Length: 308
Image 1 (cartoon, rainbow, N blue to C red):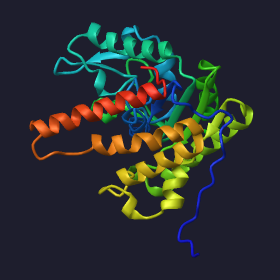
Image 2 (spheres, rainbow, N blue to C red):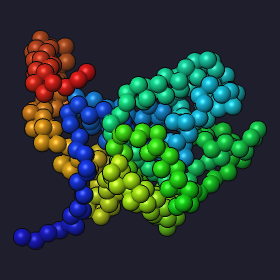
Image 3 (cartoon, rainbow, N blue to C red):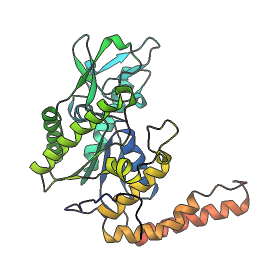
Image 4 (tube, rainbow, N blue to C red):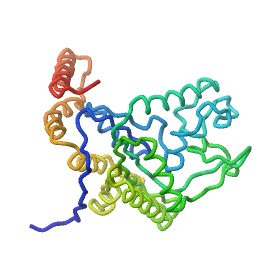
C-alpha cells in the first residue's frame, strides 16, 4: 500500500496515564486546546491555572514568584489592575482582587498535587519590563513597547529553567511538548531557531531525568506528519481544530493506559451526543435527550470510578 505521509514515532512513557491521573497543563494556547480535550472527555485535569504563558521563564516565575509582592502588579490608565506574571484573565478593579486571583491559581496547582505535568512551550523569547526594575513578564498587557526589551534564552538557560520546573514537582511525571504555532513576527528562520532552542533544552533535561521527563512530539506531528496547510487555521500559523484533534488522538494512543482506551471507546457516543446542536433547545424532546445523555455520562463515570 502506498503511504502519503511520514509517520512520527512516539516513545512510550515510563508511566501511562489512567482515568484518575491528576494532570496539569501549563503553557501556550496549544496546551489550553489539548487540555480542553481532556476536560471535555470527563477526565480530571487542571488547565493553565495562570492563563496562557508562552516561554519557560514565565512559567517558572508563575510557579515560584511571591504572588503578594506589590512589584508584580500595576494599575493602567483605566484603573484596571494587572499582574505581570499572568495573562489578562486575572485583571481586576482592585489590587486585592488581582492578588487574590493569582494566589488562588497558585493554590489550585499545588493543592491538586499533579502526578503528571504537561508543559507546552511556544518560544524561548520573553519580554522584560525595564522600569522601575527589570522583570520578565508573562504578558505585556498592551503597555507601550518602549517600556520592554525582548530577550532570547540560550539552550543552557532554558535547560536550567526546565530543570527547576521539574524539581518543583519531584514525584510527578513531566511531559514537555513544543507548540506547532509558528512565530511569523520573528521571521520563519528565527521562529525555527526558537523552537530548536526549546527542543535541545528538553532533550538535555530528558537525558538528565530519564525516569521523570518525557517528550511528546506535538510539534513534529503537525509539521512533519500532517505537513499540509489544510491543517492550519485561516491565519496559516495556528493549527486547525482538526490538527489539534489528531494530536490529541495520538497522545491518547501513546500516553494513556488500556483502561483509558476502553473509556474513550465508551465515551465516544456520549461525546457525539454532547456536541449535538438541536434546532429547538427548549423542546421537550431535546430536554429529554440532554437528560438521558447526562445520565449516560454519570453511569460511565461511575463504571470507571472516576474521581470528581
